[in-house]
Length: 621
Ligand SMILES: *[C@@H]1O[C@H](CO)[C@@H](O)[C@H](O)[C@H]1NC(C)=O
Ligand SMILES: *[C@@H]1O[C@H](CO)[C@@H](O)[C@H](O)[C@H]1NC(C)=O
Ligand SMILES: *[C@@H]1O[C@H](CO)[C@@H](O)[C@H](O)[C@H]1NC(C)=O
Ligand SMILES: *[C@@H]1O[C@H](CO)[C@@H](O)[C@H](O)[C@H]1NC(C)=O
Ligand SMILES: *[C@@H]1O[C@H](CO)[C@@H](O)[C@H](O)[C@H]1NC(C)=O
Ligand SMILES: *[C@@H]1O[C@H](CO)[C@@H](O)[C@H](O)[C@H]1NC(C)=O
Ligand SMILES: *[C@@H]1O[C@H](CO)[C@@H](O)[C@H](O)[C@H]1NC(C)=O
Ligand SMILES: *[C@@H]1O[C@H](CO)[C@@H](O)[C@H](O)[C@H]1NC(C)=O
Image 1 (cartoon, rainbow, N blue to C red):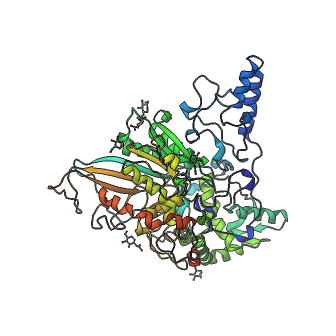
Image 2 (cartoon, helix red, strand yellow):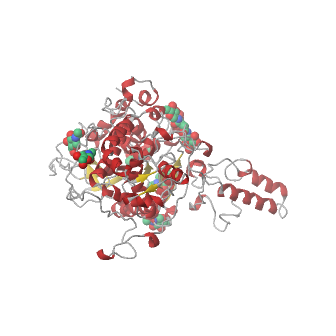
Image 3 (cartoon, rainbow, N blue to C red):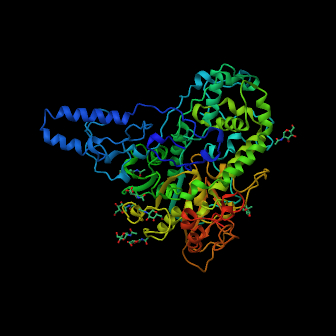
């Protein structure tokens, strides 16, 4: 649960941090939130300035101005989330005309920007707690023998010497396979061989949906529980850790919450740069494009960092960010779990995850139990310790927790996340398809050149029924979303190659539904529309008898997803995994019926839908 006083309503399913319930902690207070609210302070100062000005200019005029400051509320004050520390972000042309004071104490002009283009208003930014700053220059451990350097070559130290060595023989880092906590890297591939563009072919449109970058844990993720419990034990004066856990004697939990860490900004910036090289030509320099994200702080900043990477720091000349409200009670295709009340009750994936955690972490728990005195070390502590490794690494650059686990335990950790995503958000979830449906409809609507009215999903019709906020004339569409939502989007498109059920008692070895390949931090699905002069046969030879043909190509984290392996309308024999556009659209036509949004999200179901293992097709059975 999120902080009830923050004004930010509980949304337990933004990412999967909250999937793993630790019952002994339910109802415990969350970490203290900063009391100082710079936004309120800024507004207070602004009002002071307006008030003083009133002695210089005419009083009634200024009072009027004060009444209509920016956010449309009396004196510009409304209860914004108490944790919000967002500072003003220049989104160029909308907010601050040049020459006008901008920032603290300035006399900000009246904003006429509609809410959905206002990137300044932190009202729905969510919690934004900053954590301890990195200080690797001082704290870095290095091994002179191995000739390491004062400054590392990469910001994140991911070459951890794990117990048990590298059993894969592939020299993979453990950071390659830790589910949604994997820092971005290209996917290991989805079994498709890739081919260059045929002669004369042309990419005519790209629609991207991207996850935000590396971040702190979400509020309510409860990995901080380990820190809190250890702190309590220390206060009682009994805690003592030995051996490889010895570092806990001086360790404290000091991570922030929810917002992106520096690595996250880099991931999105780099993605923007890569997309500029891949698709920059599709941008018409004489027009501005609309890109869409949500109001959440990390979502907005992910979009901004991407735009800076794609266009440069003057990106506000080239793109307008549309922010769709992410909060309970709103419709949002980029956060499709909103307006899907049944999602809050789904726990099949979390149950499967718990079952698995209690299996694969037994040995590690025994190991660690013996190393601490004055503390009852449980399997939940072991899982929290394992989860701490990726979070501390993206926050500080390294983490002592990473070395505590074997290579196999890391593979199994990744699997614990696969189980949870599969059962809560993918084909194993009764709302799996429904949550992604709105976005699926939007992609199809753009391909068919029409706006959307009420469509039996969670789209916001006010925004989608209007080319001002749902444009149709772009060649490039950039949207930003969350990991679990992207998993549901893949289900909503009917990509059943990710549907195979997962066993919560046994690690299956390599499996298709691998979250680290699907939605790592900074994940992106690029949907390319490719036009060829002649039809391209399944074997990639041109059909000389035909004419111009269009194809859809799904690229997930830089690797092709084969459409014909999942959609019967597409050709399963194609070498390249593409699908002819007409066939793709025909397949997509049935997706609404398969998702059954109304029933899935708002209906009453048979009880067995709540249990893991009964739902196999992403909709209620
Ligand atoms: C962005 O817009 C500006 C102003 O219209 C234009 O000069 C510039 O070329 C555009 N940037 C790119 C990368 O096309
Ligand atoms: C799309 O149309 C709108 C309204 O006519 C225009 O302002 C915008 O520049 C166009 N966008 C592109 C990419 O052509
Ligand atoms: C739809 O979006 C508009 C513009 O942001 C907003 O005012 C409205 O509250 C939204 N409606 C729902 C149901 O989300
Ligand atoms: C736990 O340790 C025992 C003994 O070393 C070993 O046989 C077993 O495979 C281990 N189990 C797991 C799940 O790693
Ligand atoms: C899309 O529809 C608009 C208005 O209905 C029309 O002007 C435009 O030419 C269409 N574009 C395409 C690519 O069909
Ligand atoms: C969509 O917009 C059109 C015209 O702007 C209007 O007639 C129609 O009622 C709207 N539909 C919905 C579902 O809001
Ligand atoms: C929000 O979604 C619900 C459920 O589909 C729908 O009834 C409602 O009309 C939508 N509202 C808007 C503004 O899109
Ligand atoms: C895994 O994906 C392959 C294609 O990559 C597919 O042939 C296979 O059926 C999938 N397995 C499951 C269990 O869905």
